[in-house]
Image (tube, rainbow, N blue to C red):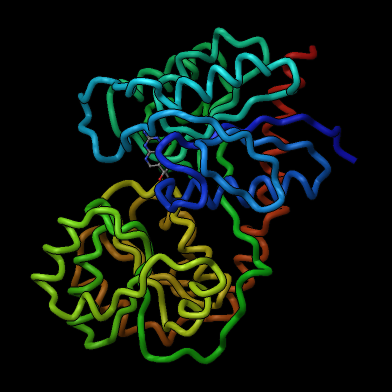
Amino acid sequence: MPTTRRLLLISTPVGPLGSGLGGGVELTLQNLCQGLRARGHRVTVAAPEGSALAGVPVVEVAGQLQPTAHTQGRNTPITLPGDSVLGNLWRYARQHQGEFDLIVNLAYDWLPFYLSEFFDTPVAHFVTMGSLSEAMDEAIRQVARQFPGRLGAYTRTQADTFGVANTFVILGSAIDLAQYDFCASPGEALAWMGRISPEKGLEDALEAAAMAQVPLKILGKLEDANYWQRLCDRFPEAADCYLGFLPTAELQQVLRQCRALVMTPRWVEAFGNVAIEALACGVPVIAYARGGPAEIVQPGVTGWLVPPDDVPGLATAIARIDQLDRQACRRQAETDYSLDALAARFEQWFESIIQALER
Ligand code: HBI
């Protein structure tokens, strides 16, 4: 039986858990807590007020939300709003650090990395996106220098973007497979899922679906209204394809009946949780060979990888969906992306940090 650890997980400051503003990290946090608790660890989450997490005690912290990092430029200075929730989250962590064996940061923000050396309780950082800014890269490299082994990432590709990859522990992701039902005989439509924001490249999926003359279903949080309006101007049918930001139960009902999921990331997608949600339903993944999806898809079996930004290549892959194996998709999810597999990887990472201190 593994040693029971007292873990404080500190969430993203961009929005309350459950709002969808935190994107994939909300799902990661939910699944990680569920998996770690099932393995006997005592997990506490600190997050912006209004957060909710099934079955996990959440310390709700007040304060002004942090601007999202993925809309800033590479040389944007670090900003903190007045009464910042980020600052308040880390004041809570410092005051209560003695109650925990390890603090785990899930915010993609400068402050937690900078503060690491001022804490007595070790701080592990799970980095949730690829390189986005000079200031964040430097903060991450500082932790790599001072505390090698305390940086975690979803994928090797994502870690490589920071130039200190050999100091990252690669953890992958997971979903609660019990919430996804396998479907052997889908309908005609393709699916596209994700935050509707420029870096996700929805226009390419709309263009490829039109080329292949296959209907597309769009699911996800409408994050950038101006961008969406431009898409609707260019693709009049887009508004009819959009089904909104659905809770998992309703999302998987739509997803499982699709012939494939199309992923068109413009940026280095750190992981792409939507890829394993599709696999869990038996839905193969057609993705640009860029970032996380390139480390998930097994070409010719559970999906197709397409040269990045090659829209005709997407249409060609769409025409070859029938060569893929929906049962193999579900099996891959069960082997690599179950909650227990993820929790076991994180537990091993945490033990390596804690035991390094006990020597
Ligand atoms: N931006 N400043 C900031 N902090 C975050 O933690 C953050 C973000 N943008 C997006 C985001 N987190 C998540 O959607 C990704 O980590 C998945």
